[in-house]
Length: 457
View: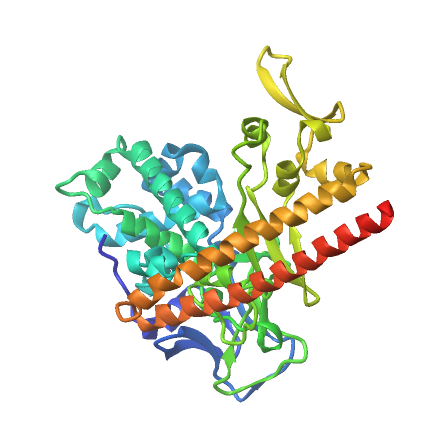
């Protein structure tokens, strides 16, 4: 779908018209790589100064999307047509963005949607967001062996399902049929859906008191982690979004005002959600590896049926050492002979439901399995199984990363240099983290076996 854009120079006019308060700062282009950014326009600013206030009605949140829908029939029709999906923050905002883009793309008597301040703000957003969901096949192949590979494949499948749901839900809505889906006049493509997803993922903030939301102008702030973070975003007593200079920070003219997108986020998540890995990152910090139940496990089907947690585990650094978490691991590591059981019971309404038991006691919450296993007299055995499972899966991922080096050497000359360098950095950081994890797991296994032999002797 054709998007309409407004030049950055026009943004200050939009800010003034919509009552956004700016205290000695402005938004201007920084560089091709960093795009627009917030920069100080005064000689000095002291710590804890309020740099910007964005009126609450301009915050693009779940609540405000439905408020806009009260006066916008076209928006409301789509929100209602897609059902429960539009009652999630992400679903509502993506649909809102799509309707705003359609509003500017369709001219004449068929004008779609009602113009609002955010209809114009969307036109200031960049035409391209360098997220992995836009990578071509050759670029995606470079991620083989990294945790990004599985995350990206899952995301693309999810986007495809969402787009299909949007189509199936709205093809009977007259204006959607004409302007989105009909072959002769329809404009909407899967690329457009990826575009609004990228807008949301790369700009959404966890705004106190509101939750995930897009905040015009504050979302123009670039990322800087740790002590380099200049400002924090918050909500004031009136529900407005505010940008506040951090305690002990001071700014002089032309300094950039940065926020953090999440200091705790790992290299994979930064690349996945924002399209970059910060230069100062010296570790992958964390990664998620999927985990499957062995094919010869007699309880495999039942375990998959009751599992609520993600099928895998998270490796992360904690005080320089490797730690991990994943309820799914414990489900993989225990079986019937250990005390795990399943029963098909009839509910009060006559339906059949699969229930989980540990030592004949029903478990309502599978997240409690680790605690129950830990209290068992065979805890050392179960813990050793878990560590060897983690070590084996980590080794498998390292081997896949090594094998995929062949793809790298073949593709080096055909890939955008910036994308290539970023993926190479991810591969290096994740390899270091997994090697450390493998070595620490090996030490834990050896220590536990040695302790067991000592007890037996």
